[in-house]
Structure formats: C-alpha cells, structure tokens
Image 1: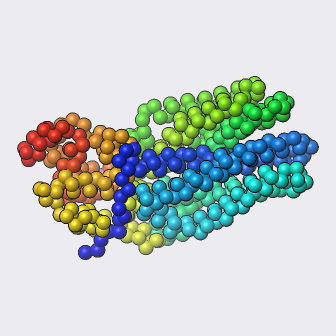
Image 2: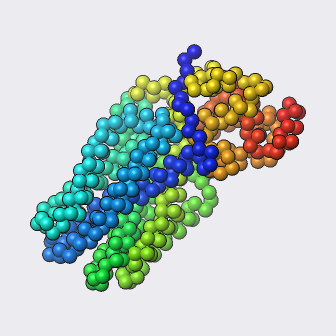
Image 3: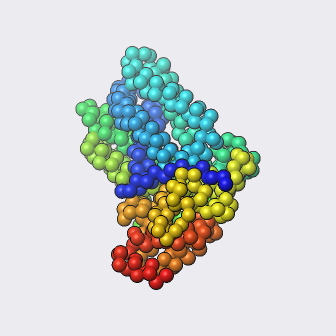
Length: 457
C-alpha cells in the first residue's frame, strides 16, 4: 500500500506551533514594512530636498537610515530566516506548495532584496559625499526595489488565501496563481500600513532632533503621511474584506471574537488621533511616545491582524488544495497533484501516514488513547493546541460530560464528510474516531469520570 508522504508533526506543547510562527512573523512584518515604507519616503524626501534646496533634510534620511540598519535590516534579517525555519517545520507541505509555484518569483525577490540592502548602505553613508542629484537617483532605486520585494511577497501571501484565478487548478501557471482580486487589495492594505508604521517609527528618530524648526517640519511631514495612510488603510481594509472567499467570511463570523472589529477600529482611531496631535503640535512628538505607539500598534493592531489573516484562510494553508494539517484535499491537474482523501478513506489515517509508529497503525483496546493522541498530533495540532493554552485549545470544544461514543459520532459528522467549511476533511474510520474521542476525553474530564464513561461503553 502506498503511504501518504506526511512529515512528522512539530508539536510545541506550550503555546502551539502556530503562535511561534505568528510571533516571529509579526516582528518581521513590523521590521520589513517599516523599511519598505521608509524607502519610498526617503525617495520622495530626497527629491523634495533637491528641488527646494534643503540639504538639511538629508540629515533625517541619514539618521533614520542608520536606525533602520539595526531596526529593520539586522532584526529583519534575523526574523526572516526565523519565518522560513518555523513555517517549514510547522507546514512543510505548505512551503513546498509555495516553492513549487513561485520559485522564480522568490528568486527575483531575493535579487531585488540584495539591491535594497546595498541601496540603504549607499543612501546612508554617501549623504554629503556625492552630489544631491546622484543621491536622489539612488533613493529612487532604493525605494522602487524595496517596494518590488513587497509586491512579490504579497502575491505569494494572497495565493495562500486562494489562487489568483480559478483556472490555476486546471492549467497551472505562475501568473494564474499570482494575480487575483485579493492580491491588489492586500497590497493596498499593506502599503497603507507600511506608510503608517514608517511615520510612527520615524518619530523615534525625529524626537531626538535638537533643531526645533527642522524637527517641527519633519514631524508634520510624518504626521501628514500617517494621517493619509491611516485613512487609506481603513478603506483598503474594506476592499480586502470584499475579496475574501466564502470560507473566510464564515470563519470571521464564527471564529473571530466579537470584540475584534471594535478593537481594530479603536486602534485605527487611536493611531489617527496620534498623528493629528503630532501634526497640530509637533513639539509633542518625543522619542518615548513614538516608541510606545510603535508597541501599541504592533500588539493591538498588527498582531491581531496577522492572527486573523492566518485564521480566515482555514482550512487551507496554500492554494486551497493543501489542508492546514498537510493533507492534499483536492485534485490540481495543472500541477499534477491528486487528492489524498480517497486513500485515507480506503485505508485510514493511521495506516497511510508514513511516519506513524508501527504499533499505532491498528487501534486496539490497549493503545486506543495513544493512537488517539497520534491522530490529534497529526490531524489537529496544526490548528489546535492540545494543552490548555495556545491557539484554539482542542479541549475547549468538548466542555461538559460526554461519552466516548458521543464524541466519536460528533467527530465523524464534523470531519469525515468535509461538511464544516473551516475544518479539513478528515475521513476517520470508526476505530480512529473512537481513538481520537478517547484521547480528547483525557484532556477534558477528571480520571474517575472518564473511567466511568468508558466503562459504560
């Protein structure tokens, strides 16, 4: 019998692998989006300084650039590989799907990133050493290459939600996968955010300026940039929501907390108020306040948004053909990929998983709970924490007193037929469903109650 090439599961028992990936990704988005936004802002500001004979503005570019060398390029270069490592371990088939579809797009993105890194060093260290026209050209190259890296990455992230065009499943092709309605909506939303966070982080640098007139001038420019970016971002968010697939809308209605929309609007409103204050009273801009605002936006704005974006693409992790638990759920003729659901239905999950220990391939009375734990690790742990903490703890969905048969019947109804739009199809056979139910009961009930429930069977 052919096995399914599933990899061993990365199990992080504390907060879950999803939170580990999310924390690294949130930090990386903060660093990378700040650098891209700053690159575009530098290009405009250098051109402005050239046209208006204001070379003193280049001092801001120099000092902000030096700050970004650590804030964005050093820390971003650390968290970038961190994302690659954590996502490859947590979702190896998801990353494989992206590489198979976008390997040359990623190669192009790395070329532009090299130009960007070289560009920021040249922009910072050549201030005052070359003529301003050449410096302006360098800033334009830096800004355009930096934004190109975002364009490529956003197309790949959009594919993770759903392919750009429906015909991709049948015909394949990188352009069919890349360009879709969600691509440009997400690009617009991220562009607005990158300018907003550039304005906030830039305040950390401006707040240390001793020249009051120069500080007020740049503070107002950053504030105006932030006001426009925040308002445009709110509009882009509505466009983005309108491009989501039906499954994402169902997840938002059923899985996101009720306070999420209100909290998001509160963050947008607070950010707008901050920029209005620094525009009216630029003297109020101090480095400490800008630093606090950066943390506030990251914790209460960026982190929830990244978590929500990861949640609403469920049950898929890439292209709407790789489930979040790594099983291929549909045929993709354009890529030569076949669904693995029929094989699981015919032989069972335990028998077809190549890394399943031999003694767990057949469920017995002696190994039922252990086999159920193996099923939970391989089929559920990518989305659900198996402990009391982390993302969507599995135990919280089975509160109260239930028998093993009741839980098994629920699992088969919810998972086996693919009837739950935000859950993968997991065609458990009767023995596997009972084994998974037995394990779940060990996480939700005291030992004596659990023993009685099993004895009644």
